[in-house]
Length: 396
Image (spheres, helix red, strand yellow):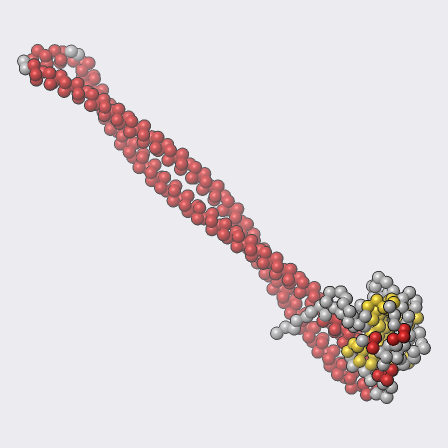
């Protein structure tokens, strides 16, 4: 499983490497010193890359999650539009069948009415040609008055029936035409609604395709970012392993410093490195969830800085985050660190005493105000300097 990196890890790695650098700097060969410094800087750069890539990966995943939600909403809307289109298609088919049926009925009614009109027209024309002769012959030729009366009434009823059939056919024609008109108007509305919904569906499908392309692009970015993050973590693991190997080799030389006096004998009686205002104490909160592993003592720029005890300078150079830094090895695993200096007056390998001015206060390392960063380490781990310094000069 890949190792997880927190915001504290770069600081721990930096201080761990500083401890290794300072433990036995004077006894390490030149190539080992250069290699260790190079790996330390590379590890810091890797930790920064890991933090940056992790933030980038989280942002990309969050954005991809938002696009997935948009896709879900679009797919739901598209499903609803397709359902509505299917319902409209069914109504349009039903209306078309109704229109077809009414058209057939209308044609049949028109044919029937035309037949009645033609028959009536023939009857009228025949009666007109015969005039009153036919009626006169009927009157003169029929001797039975009762039968004559029935024949005249029958002729009248026959004409009235024909006229009624024509009127009924005309009324049916008008009814069928009105119904077909209503269905055609409804059909036109349905077809208009269908066109509108089809256009809306096309817009939604276009948006869906765009979001799908965007999601695919984001997923590819996430995969690339994930790969880059895994590579950085593997490289960081390799660098940490190399640092551990260097630490093991350096620890073997620790015996060379065993003849130095124990710093523990002066615990609680060590002199402060300078007089000033205590701005931050060991273990107090700093940016984010990090804690101070030393003291931050405010003083005017150029204020002299002195070592807390005799020792040998094992590091005197600029270091990221600490500016101009000087590290003193007091023997038996005890180190003191003095950072953010304006100037350094001793070089690696030189011996110092508490009366020596080893540096002056500054604000190097990109700090907004002058102050000395002071740290005390025992066995590679930071310890609270306040338990080692004299209480008489407690700075507040």
